[in-house]
Length: 217
Image 1 (cartoon, helix red, strand yellow):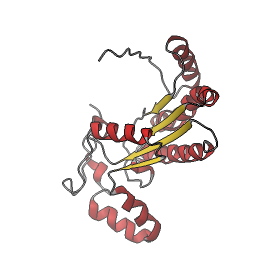
Image 2: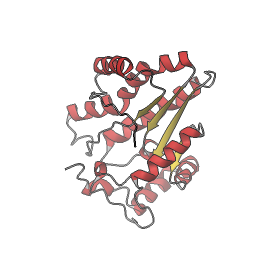
Image 3: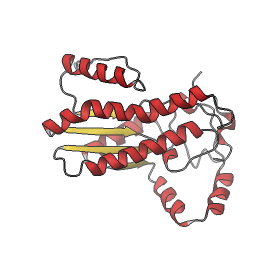
Image 4: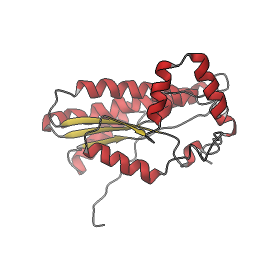
């Protein structure tokens, strides 16, 4: 209440548009000290069923868009020694599923981007980065997706993801997995053979969860 807000329309997949919008933001609002990269799209099909342009769109928005926004705002953060880069990613960056090859690939790339960026900022005073890897969130983005045990793995509420993200930024936490049980995923992928992981995918229903995918309507 009482906070002044500004909004700017920008295609983050368009490099020049990002740079132009960043310039307009600085001129109207001033220096940006917190950048949240949250823009993403999902095509929701297998590779052979995917349109080439749709695949490119996913990579441009989900991955390259973060390159352009970070390049646009990070230099001033470093100069001021005050800034935070936040990436709202997905647990699918660590564990891909069939039927979302465009999304999983782009999120894995974005995860590597943030991992490299975070390490590169270790000696930069006042500037940090946070990567958030949430499980399925109850928005329209993955509407129709079904897992086998929804009561065991319920979708996250957007408000929960937002609150935990703010807390992670305040604590300068580099990596946040939601829910905490997703840490088990990392352990399992590190120690189990591929055949065992495939059976887990089949048993949990992640192998077929995109068969009912509808997305935003």
